[in-house]
Image (cartoon, rainbow, N blue to C red; front, side, top):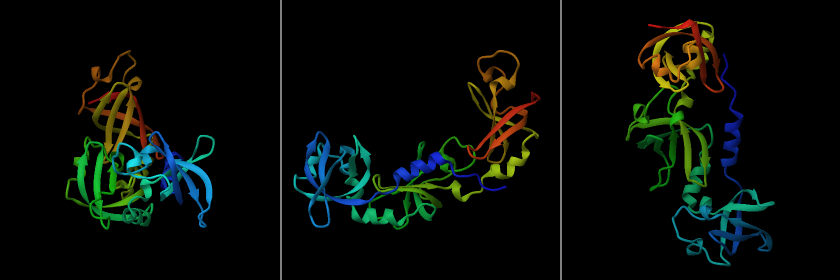
Length: 273
């Protein structure tokens, strides 16, 4: 069975985060926390106007962008789009540190990189990518990109100081960050599991939520059984019917490779063991 097609919503987000063209602009003033600019062409002549939103002025924290720029100063900024009836918006922070920008532009989506885990948090993992400029930590792995399996905390997969190999998902010059994925280098377990549709399997309940239960069906494969499939009786929550760790026999109703989901149904009735 072939790999699932890329999620078009993810692709759209990645396209928005990709680095834009770099333009030379002249600071003309300030509008609150925003920097007003005028584009300058190669001959130094005036061109259209634009703005640098306050949060795109610098990676440093300042009270006001006037601490960074003066009226008449020329700077490089990256195009990030058009708002307010076509007004051009730019990012100065994306061009603020040349060594960092050069490193980020050299890292491409799909590239396999190595690095060292710097910090592990409940929301994700920070990674020092080999070759990044000193003083920066450019890599980040979101929790869903750590593994295909079910985990309660990223520390179940990696630890600080560990050497890892990961695939680049997207590089963001504006944040100075490279989003990485460990599971992109692992086989999607649902590809092999997809032929189990229609089969009756038994596994432990690993999580109970108000609308149903999650069942471990195989290594790195978890399915969801809706509350309505647990009983014909009217109950408010599944924890009145089953317990975590309890074995339950279910039927694999569907495998969605695109969303990485397994839908379960009753095996006759969802038998408990």
